[in-house]
Every structure is written in structure tokens, then in C-alpha cells.
Length: 92
Image 1 (tube, rainbow, N blue to C red):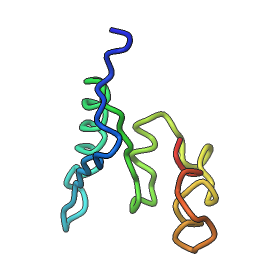
Image 2 (image 1 turned 90 degrees about the vertical axis):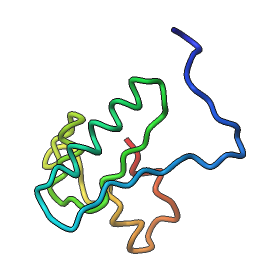
Image 3 (image 1 turned 90 degrees about the horizontal axis):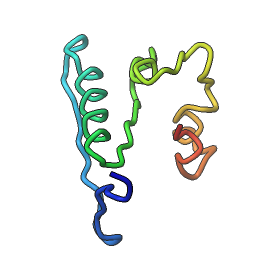
Image 4 (image 1 turned 120 degrees about the vertical axis):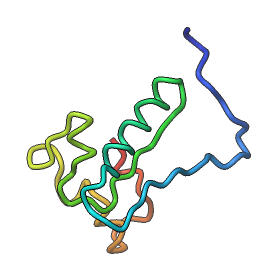
């Protein structure tokens, strides 16, 4: 199975999938995490952005304990405040 990772042409923009709802507690994070794990298991490179959950639920699904492992400087906050030019510093 080595060397069989799916590839797209360099000039093709990757697809973006958004999971949204106007109500809380409707499994948005669960759907997002399970979708990213399924796509990764199928050989795709996946970036899950947890941009609006102060609880860090998606991070916990991936083994990070927000109170122990994630600090304000590791989040998107410095980017939103204009302190960072891009978000690569926050990708784990």
C-alpha cells in the first residue's frame, strides 16, 4: 500500500467541505471529525479547522487535551488579531 496516496495536480485547488448549522448540539463536530478520519483512512490528506469551538472538542477527538496541550498562541487568535501572516503555526 506504500506509495498509493491519492494525488491531485499541483494547479488544482483542493475541495473544501463545510459543516454548518444554526443550532448548537446537532453533531457538527462529530460529523466533521468522522468525515476527516474517513477521508484520511481512504488516503486523502485532510485539514480539519476547528475555528469556532472554544471547548476544543475536535482537538479532544484527536487526542489533544485543550487545557493541557493548547494555548492561546497555538490557536487562530494571533492570526485573527493580525499578529501572524498565515496559519501554518497552528497546524498540528
